[in-house]
Length: 335
Image 1 (spheres, one colour):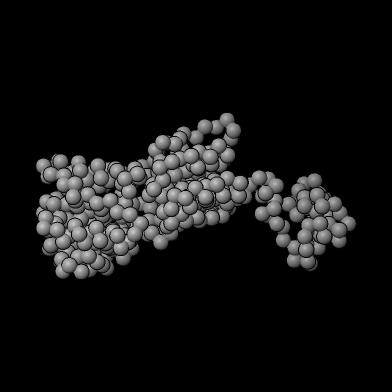
Image 2 (cartoon, rainbow, N blue to C red):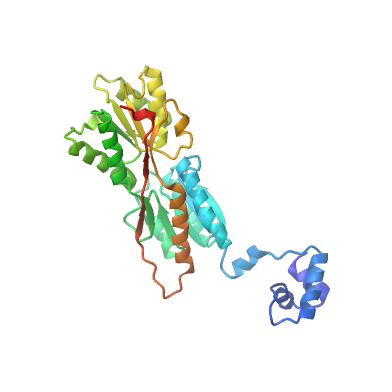
């Protein structure tokens, strides 16, 4: 039964029934009881989605990420949901699969008012920000996290990538590594560039030469990435340590080492940015730089709701919030 039918049965106007169901003071207690009794009799439930549309509110937040299978993003979603659900909102998750065209299509799809705010982490190929500015022109609150663009005015939640990469590289050096390769995913993303800069700074601080052959830019193809790593580790001047910017490249490195008969950490040490919960049980256990993914998601959601709940005259600063990653030392980098 819909609201119109319920009103006809009660011989009341639709607006009176609607007010009674909302416990409005404009409706007498006697009428409210009649309406609630009839609604219960017919198992009537209010259509909150339609009501929200009339108020131009969807009570929904979109979270746009490259992939949900990544441990970092799944943990960040959990953090965001923990905050969003307390606000009585729902979460819609969109995966770009690291495809910039898919990201553009999702951005256009979300411009029709079906969400009240957007949390977004970019693809590794996003260079143009036109589709992102279109969202802002529609006055849809927008917050970026982890993979963020620095050429757009919007709040951003990131981690201390430069400092944590410097610390990770120095850890390898202190444990005997002298020829350290870094495996990156993109030259566009600021997180990759910050990590690379931290890696290079650590080498310079310890008077180690930066070898361009040890800086690999990988892509979306797992097989192509393994081929690059295989070529690197089969070379005459192979590195004795690998610093992976994402956990997928660390796993690929483990596989290639096993294939080539290289022992970790005796022949080569491996460290990686990773939120992998099974890092402890890998053989050997993986030393990781672990980002506070849950807290990043929660903080991004909190900032987003400040934008949503801000009054017309209230200005929310577009600042960047930087949280700290943590180094967990395990067997893959033992001296």
